[in-house]
Length: 470
Image: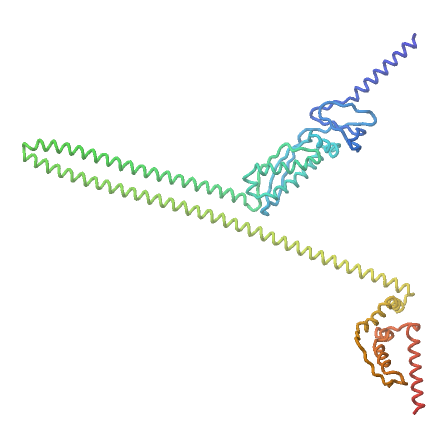
């Protein structure tokens, strides 16, 4: 009975321990991390082994011994990129300080890249890696755009940067969250000149609008005064006409009074007409002065526009001339460096050839027992076949289409004259021994000296025979 109890307790303990062990190997993945399981995690459809298995959210069982796991943090990383002297499409260098927010991607496939390339790296190391990629792509985008596009169409610039940077970050398992370009400056002041041009244009437009409004106000005021005077004169004329009719009816009973009233009416009418004419003349003078003032303002506005545009065009031409001069200087420096490197490489090649030839000659002299003359003879013996070919080539090119011989057997000792002709032609070729003597050397005895002695002895015998005959 006690043994049964002990066995039951041991079984319970083993089962409990196994259950706790299984529970401890069942790992849950938080939402802000990626769990990377590596080791023996299976194979793909084509039979190749899978390097790692990535899980974002959920849980997985980690087999002991054959599997292990680590976490990748999904916390966004802010990277400050202070790009200096980036070359734009117009060959103008600009500064583009910006900040990028990146993080490890949870996209399928991209997580696999992160597991293969970022697992085990610390946060500063990942930031440095991403910063290098961002620097390169940002320079590439700036090189394909003009400064006007970068400065005015900021959305297009940010879209191009985002597209290029994100495609490269995905290769290492990162994704681009946000791009923020703080300010854009250039060394030559081109952007500042563009701003001044826009400000001058806005100021000129405002001045032109104010002048037009003042002109419309002056014309309206003059028209109002004119209408007022016309209406007043018309009312006065109607009133005078009524008064005259009434006075004429009353004056019919009294001729004297009628004459006096007529005279008074005439004087009053004349005075009013004179005053009306003066008022019209003053109105015309005022309108003329207003027109002259408006013309002067328009002339001043047009002169200001022409001067500002001329100054901007002058600055643009100066900047283009400076950029072209800088480009020509760099091209000239590059050509000079290329020529120098080519000549230096040729000199090293010639030096190497001469050095190897000197080593070969030294070994040849050593093989000849230290005798330089014997070494030279060995070199000439090696070239003997080529020298013989040169002698043969001396008469190889002679073409004789047809030879007609009338031979009277007038040669020496009854030999044919034709034989003497051919023998003389062959003797005209420089003998090998003579060629060596001209070079300051002598052939070995087995190559030429015996023949020379034989010829000398033959010549001596011929001389003796000639003396005997005499």
